[in-house]
Image (cartoon, rainbow, N blue to C red; front, side, top):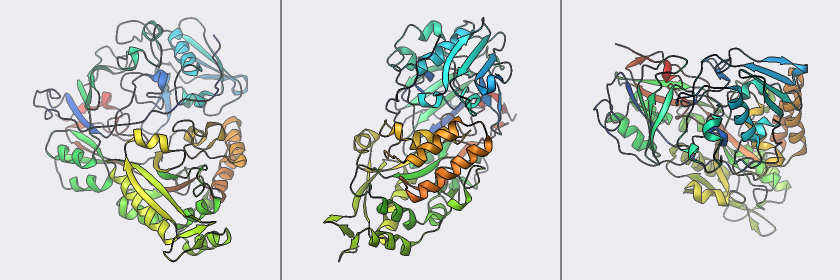
Length: 529
């Protein structure tokens, strides 16, 4: 069965959260249970859907589903639903997977190759509202070869393809009879994973029970609750009160648990960065001189020290400074003199109030950040302060995503992005002009032919040196023509009651707290006593 080719993507999933009320861990109430068998985690947001057909779990770590492959603690690919890593032939254009024997969905039906084909065909169907389908652009065809083999044929060799097959597999016998965009599978999923969804109170919590027939072995943690608590301070308060077993927290709040002997703090490095989108359609943020000046005006080091309490790194682009693909000559320091010179040469002259103007238009724009996110608020305020030193007036506003999204074409947003596994993951959707204004893809509507060429080369080349050169070119072009002001890469901080062992962290993408965190492998935890 041939997949439909990609012709653009739909609007991205907005994440929203609300303060939830639940019983204390281990009290036997709504979220409770035996302390060694039940875990309640506080996270800031919830997904709109639990269907992989719409993008849920696409980077792995879904508790309900499995992909053909998964990643270990060191981010190395390993077999999951597949028996082994794929057989790659035809110069990197054909990938063949053999399925693991005896795997069943949680409803008792067996996994077959047809389920894998159905999953990928549906994701790639133009009618499916999947925000990440461009990440599978290389797929020409996926077909079953008997019950236990799946063969992918690619239009071009795609070096990162195997890493994309962590995509969770769904059961055709259930999802196949539904509209993937609106069907009940989005909120009542069935998978092969270690946990089964038992309840979802929107804006409050999701509850899961262990899958006793999981092919990887029945988990020791029998009940898992993800409490949706948008406000950072409320999440910390509920953790301190014992209402939660663990939580994702900003660095300054995580630090307040440093002397708590009953809890342990975990720090995960990440590709998660904070950046200000600079919409090209706005007469101020669309001016290259303004964008270059803002890039030079920001004090990234101070943001890391003061806002992140040292738990992060300055961001000079979408790739972190310790990434092997990072172009070292892309590092740059705050330089207000150079920022001023660029603006002067472009005709942006300072007025009596210190704010620059050009052709009667003030260098002024609005920067929005999502309400309740203290880290983004602090970044936005620091950014506005630095911009003011260069003569640019930035008005900072908080709002819900429902308010922010319609304004993204003209207003700047303090946004978060970042994907692990390969530089193609995340960079293409962040920067390629073909995705400009496509929901949360390319929010700045950035359009630079040199960057597009670098992205296409990086995606299609098999030669590691050619790819490295392409991504280094991309990073240098972003310095010349920034569509975003990159600020910091953030280490993710978690605090968790010290009642289990075998907890680890991975290098994480932007999304964290739900699929990532030290509970990424909760199915492998063991009680300490």
